Amino acid sequence: MIGKLTGILAERNPPQVVVDCNGVGYEVDVPMSTFYNLPGTGERVSLLTHFVVREDAQILYGFGTAEERAAFRQLIKISGVGPRTALGLLSGMSVGELSQAITTQELGRLVKIPGIGKKTAERLLLELKGKLGADIGLPAHAATDAQADILQALVALGYSDKEAALALKALPKDATVSEGIKLALKALAK
Image (cartoon, rainbow, N blue to C red; front, side, top):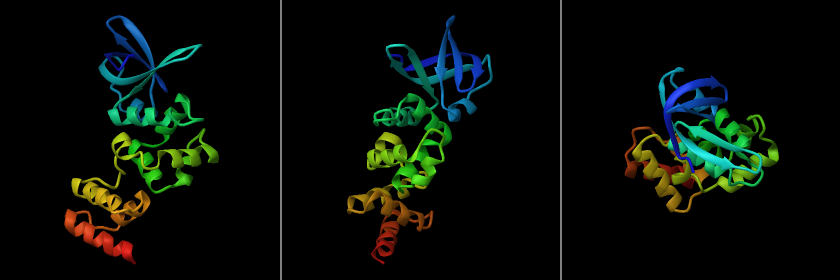
């Protein structure tokens, strides 16, 4: 398995790039989020990869971050979501946005992505629920360590990811962990 490529960016043809590694050019399909963050042609680049071998093709998918690759791998485990669909999903929203959409069960955000229909979006929400955390990352609004701790505490107390995320949104950004938990519990008790 090829886990990482480091070399010179030889070509850029969205959504594919060619990375020249010591004279061998590897075609790599990348999500648009990675594509836009790549250096210019002729510059050094490093991509984390996922190698897919099928009966009729061998395809490399490249990612700028470990979180993107982890999200991609989680997505392709879902029935009906292949590598192309997963790549399209990661091109349409960041990993943080995907995580937030799953946590808050926002079907509408997923359906807006080309290639994602209502049934696929429902399957994504169902199968990825509760698998976010370490696999894909905390929701985008859990930006600080304190907020992440508050979110984890609320989930540990039995609140759903959605309830905890909504309570977290209402908290002041500078709240300490203990203060945030108290405020969140008061809000959830109403």
